[in-house]
Image (cartoon, rainbow, N blue to C red; front, side, top):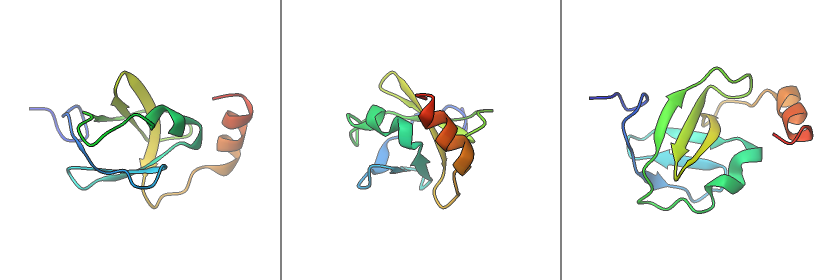
Length: 91
């Protein structure tokens, strides 16, 4: 069986703030500002998978509804200069 942060499908427990999503395992993730629009159709029944990544901006990604969004654990800080550069470059 895949681990919860390595491939198991999970449902959304809470997504009341546009930039924070809490999954059914209790993990909370901050969505990259440039990816928030990709999550607008996520519903509680949306299946999501958390995967580790080597992106210079984020530590993990959430995959669901055919999209991948960059995330970091809730409470962590985004690397400000890298985020500004990514947003300026459209990504």
